[in-house]
Image (cartoon, rainbow over all chains, first blue to last red; front, top):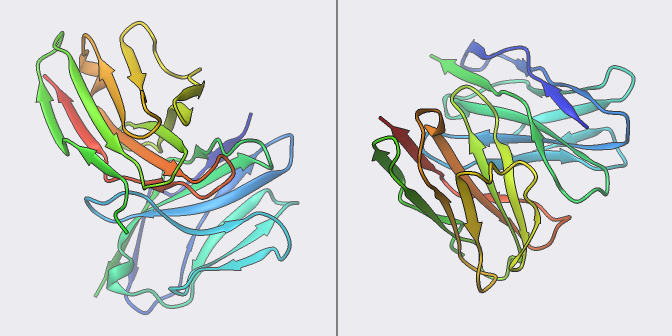
Length: 114
Length: 113
């Protein structure tokens, strides 16, 4: 079975500052990794994913995450955040090639302030 | 293209009452998922359908929860009777196939009093 740990439940940050949301996973088999974002009163949206290949993956709105197998991590970063990035971010893991069953972390609330 | 539609968005019921949630997946999506999201937690899978067949319902509390997807399109999740601990957000998601990206609906927030 897989598990995900998001140690930070809330991360406050000022606009235009950099941010890192931490995600660590546990699994005895190869995994796929995902970051989902949930804006208020909306459903979860896929932000980015790692399936194979380059360990650095990017989203269209400036976020990036790096798969680090030795550290079992998939931290999410953005060099300069905007007010509109305020949302809850969930890290998720699934067994590679194993039927798409997602195991989510508890989420990190990113609050961007002026 | 319309996304995953769920109704109602909010529901308040008294304990021991029945409740039902409805989900309409994205057109053409064969795989449908129901998740439970408790406050301060990530979503947890309750059941997954491939067309009309429930292929993973290991996390569904079958004593009070039931689900159906009769024609392989819309799905209904039912709780009978509801308990206080069932207060949560119930999310529906769909994907083209079992290995494809999941698209989530906005969820139904259930409050049991």
